[in-house]
Length: 329
Length: 255
Image 1 (cartoon, helix red, strand yellow):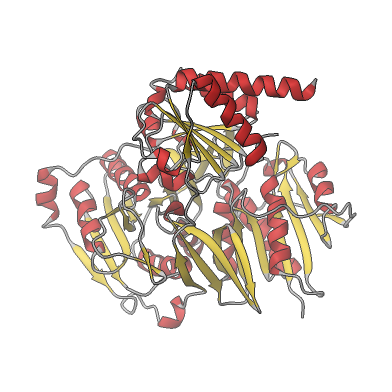
Image 2 (cartoon, helix red, strand yellow):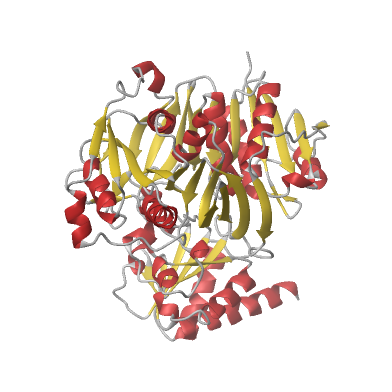
C-alpha cells in the first residue's frame, strides 16, 4: 500500500512560497514508492495563482481553499480545515514549512490526529524503510536525528536547507473546497499590520545584513537597510541591538529570536556572543565587519574586514550597485 | 483569575554545547528558566496583580527543575508543581502530562513560552490547548484581558496581528511581551515558604501507554566545523573589491 503525503503550501502576496516548494521536495524524499500519492493543499484569500503553480509540480491533486476569512492565519479556522483535509485524503504524512503558520498548525494537527511530530527539519535521510530527520537543537549548536515510530507523521521544514522540488509543468487537477464557518470558531483575527510588506522575510532570505551594538542607533540601521535592499536581502540584528532599542525584536537573530541559514550573512558591528552565533553559524558564507580584531564573530566568519561598519557598509553598497549596473548594461 | 504557567528549565543560552557519544553533555551546565517562559511567568504575575487570583507554575522534568520553579516562585508566582519524570521525550507526551494536571485546575489562562531554546519545536503549549479543547494564540507580544475576552498582538514573521479570543485560553509569549523582573531578596525568602508540589504521572492518572513517545531521538551530533576564514588585508577599497571577487567567483553566491 502506498502512502498519501499531504503538503500544506503557503503563499505570500499571491506567490507560492519558496519553503513550500522545498516541502514538496521533502515529500518526494520521504515517499518515492510507485503507489505513493502526493496531494498539495493551499489555504488563503485569493489562491488561484498559487494553486495553479502548485499544479505544475509533480503532484496528483491540488486542494484549493479560498475564502476571505483565510487571509491571515487563524488557528481555529486553519486547524479545523487542515484536519478535515487530512482526514478526507487519508494523509499518512503531512508536511509544511516551519513558518509562522507551520509552527502553529503542525502541533495542532499532530495533537488532533495523534501523529508524531518532527519540526524544523534541515535534512532527510532514508535507511531502508527508516526515515531519519535531522533538526537543529539549541538553535543549531547541535543537531539531532529523530525517527517517528507511529503511523501518522507531521513534519515541518526549515527554509533554505532542502533543494526545491522540480517544476515539471504538469497540470494536476485542482479541487476547490468550501469553507463552513461554524460556532466552533472562538478566535478572530481583527487586523494585520503588514510591517513586513515589500520586505524579504528574514528566515527565508538568501542574504541577511545584520547589525549589533556597533550600529549605535536606530538611524545607524539605515546603512544596513540600504545594503540589504541592493542585495534583495533582509535586515537582522543581535540581541544587543534589540535590547538597546535600535530595532524591533522581530529582527533578533540568535538562540532567543530567529535562526537563519542564508547563503550570505553579513554581520556588522556584532561581537558574536554564543547565543547570537547559535542563530546564524549555519549560514553558507559569513562576512564579519567589526572594528575589534579580537571579536569572536571573526572565528566563525569566512571573510573578515577589520574596520568601521559606517565606512565599509556604504562601500559595499556602492560596489554591489556598480556590479548590478554593469550586469544589466 | 486562575493562571497556570507552563515552564521548562533549559541550558543557559550562553552555554557551549558539548556532544559526547551521541548525547549533549549535561554535567556542569548552568540551567535557567527557558527565556520565553520567563516572559510567561512575568506576564502571569502582572495579570494577577491587575485582576487578582493566583499563579501556578508547572513543569515536567527531573528533580533539578525544582530550582527553576523556585526562581518563578521568587519572582512572585504563588505555587509550583513539578511533574517528576526523567523519561518523557516527545512533545505530545509532555503535553499530555501538562494537560492532565491543568484539567483539575479550572484555569482561566494558561501561559507558556513561544518555544524552548533547547528543542525549539514550540509544540507543547499548542498541544496542551488542543488536548484541553481550548483556543490558543502563539507568539504574543502584547496581551490585554478584559473580563472574559482576550486581545493579543502576535508577531507573525514581522507582521503584527491583532487577535481576539475568550477565556479560558492558552497564550504563548514572544520576546517583547514584557521585561521579566529579577527575583528580589524578600521574594527569594518568601519563595522558600511557598508550596512546591511533586506529582507523578501515575498520580495524574496517566498510564505509561498514555505517554508512549511517538518520536525517538536516535543521534545527536555537533555541527560541521566551518572552514578557516580569512581576514582581508590592505586598503578598505581593496578589501571590498577582494570580498566581492570571492563571493562572485569562489563561493558563487552573488551573481
